[in-house]
Amino acid sequence: GAVVSQHPSRVICKSGTSVKIECRSLDFQATTMFWYRQFPKQSLMLMATSNEGSKATYEQGVEKDKFLINHASLTLSTLTVTSAHPEDSSFYICSAKKHTGQGDGYTFGSGTRLTVV
Amino acid sequence: GQNIDQPTEMTATEGAIVQINCTYQTSGFNGLFWYQQHAGEAPTFLSYNVLDGLEEKGRFSSFLSRSKGYSYLLLKELQMKDSASYLCAVLEDYKLSFGAGTTVTVRA
Image (cartoon, rainbow over all chains, first blue to last red):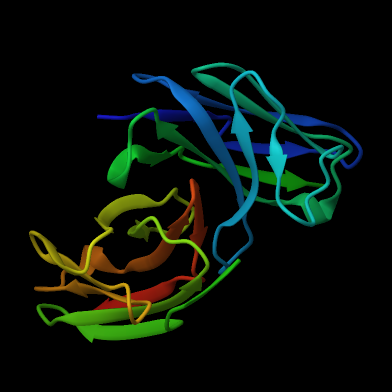
């Protein structure tokens, strides 16, 4: 099966600092990864699409300078929340797409609970 | 863009059947997914439909009508552990867009 590892699972940081979240595909190569944000009792909102070896594509309303995405290899994408503020506190989830996958080819990481104090 | 609508909450009794409807509007369609999500956890895959009709997987079935922009997820023989949020997601090009989710509460 396809396994996606996301780290850390929980992080608390001070306002103004930066936090890096890692998303790894463990047993397959992921040319494309996705980053979502989920506020309490709301659905997942796509923030950006991360493509290996090229710049990420951000959804409308998502600040690319604040949410830095790097997809340097076929198994790793990172999301860095820069100058975090309390309103950035949320559940961040990554998803990786298998190269030839449809259906269950979209696999989610376990999520990162970010709390900015 | 796409509008994905599903009911906010549903309650059912253990052993019963519940049907969660999802309607969508999209300019491009490459499939529809259903995911289960427990609070504080990532979504887990339940089903995928790309052609019209019913897909059955054990206690869970999913139906799709592309002409009507409509899908449903059917949960049979409900168990307490089925209490969760169920997310309808539409694949447009290569991107998944999610509905707000339906919280299902199973009561004894």
